[in-house]
Length: 334
Image 1 (tube, one colour):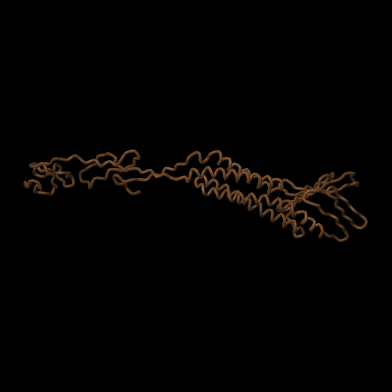
Image 2: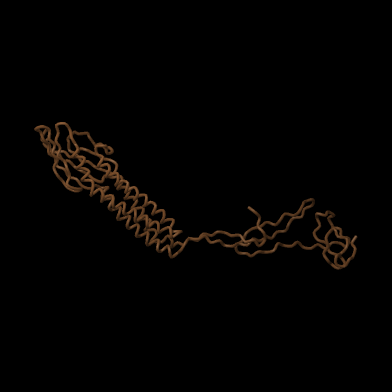
């Protein structure tokens, strides 16, 4: 750090962040974004469509069992419920090449949800930055609108294309000696599945429809849209405040009053310490008291380094210690 000079201006930063920048509008928008992000993540991790197959049984138990199959964005899980003594709890796997049409439908929906999640996170970040730079907050509104649309399109796309993809897969199912009659009439519904092998046939009831992830995707769209609207309101209020600036306050440097020490056999006296004060103006450095020397021009200490000032005994004019004639009256000093 370089030493300060007398009267030098020192700029001291003082950040000023008004509390109203974090007012109710901004806080509500941030909370909505966080809640919306949580629902989007839950939607992406849970099942979107479920088909339950109910098979009647007469031997060895006069009952029936059900086999629900849950379809999610990255795979399917199947389980069996209702068989006495059964220890089968279920199995999960990714979509195979045989189920490629179904996997492609859910894969595209997963891509939409992923981009919607990224844009929602970006909107929250831009809103936080927009508190200090309101114009950047406009980007949060734009990203929020695009993300909301993507999250809405994903469940609508599943609703429209999944039944056809499922029927395509079931229509291509073939096993030696078996005949399958298994199709769906829409995203929601019920029907009957027939499986024949020679003279033996089996009929099962099917019920299918949206599951937790699909409903949460629609609800996530509502939350994202509300978050975008709340962000637009908050950004509009922040625009009236302008950018959050850092104010530089000028501070004058001054000498701290202290007498220098003139020790025997030492060199030049050390400079008085400098400090800063935002309240006091610049002050001149203190001047040592003049010392009147005898007419002979000799000092009391006898060392040139101890000389401070010399005055002529005749006219009182100031002289340098090495001068022999007074510059004012010409009196010779021996």
